[in-house]
Image (cartoon, rainbow, N blue to C red):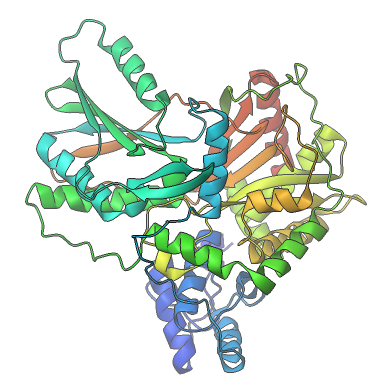
Length: 526
């Protein structure tokens, strides 16, 4: 019996015409495959939603503005090329170019930054919006070169040099000078008797120490030396200047800059044509008028009369004010179930994310007794080719309203979830905070507005560190802050789906959450 791998490729037929050839080259590059035939499907070849966004950016740069849903409706090369070519003949407007703005005047915040700045004013000592990660490094780490590489990264990305000052109660961005440098703390624990305890304490202090948004820099690094050739590096950034996609950029560029500093290579990084403040100014100009109205109307209609709270059974009463203390349990979906889910997804024209979301929705509906539920999901929001190489806070949150009324079967539920997800992605430009303003859900201090369950599908595209003469591995970090009652984080690792279910420990016991994970596995297998 042929395995799923044998079904991904049809008999090879070479691309025809200019558009098929151009797109075949782009697909081959993005999907890292040797060649793409006319009848190959983007998703069968390994495409997922983040790669789809990158594909749309490439298509947009060629002058065609097609919605993401087009790729799902026409996933083969020939069909997609036909739609793109037809679209190009009908239209004149792709996304307008992002151009540099003067740095002398007032620099605006992006909508996403404005939301985080407001939240930070409510609690200035909170570490809820820190992005920390840990690296274990073995080998001769060059201290001077490491500082130089970090400083060069800070000089290169204006987002990392942004500070947020209040002028008459309104925030403005001010940029630190390019030669500011990254705060780098260095601790030597060689020969210290209680080194493990010290390591835990230093790491925790580093991750939780508050940032001053008005002074900056909003990124810092701490290196803890454990032996002559063993180090732990702790990076902490404030979310207002970074996001998940940014980490991939940081890893790639810091690797290159360190190699330059130790003399292993010449500087390979091309200059950046625009910076984050240019994007923030462009976003405010672009998202206005009719475009703003269309997006606002969609979310107002979609979330009208949505349930205020997903009433999951909890182990303890909900506290009067939301607690951000959390914990997590691992989630592992075995290879055979993952393979079967991929086949199911291919049959129904869904991504793996949509299929697992459908199953998780069904579980939450059973647990809560509600057949109308809203689940949040982060969206990379990098729908413009010019912002792909930037570090900055672009990510947006989409509120997906899933309808489980009328006891839908698998096929019907997948269809509903696919429609909901594609529609939301087509209207993802409106920042989540503006969606909340439009929908006006009742505000309560004991839970988040619009949804209390987050489902994040990490496409695990975090790059690989390559530092000359050093062996670098990501480390585990004890940083359990949750912003919602439940947060499911999953990604594909090899043949399996893996990740964790984070939960608010004020509401749930670990055994309850382990049971929830068991329910999800049962639902996925069924």
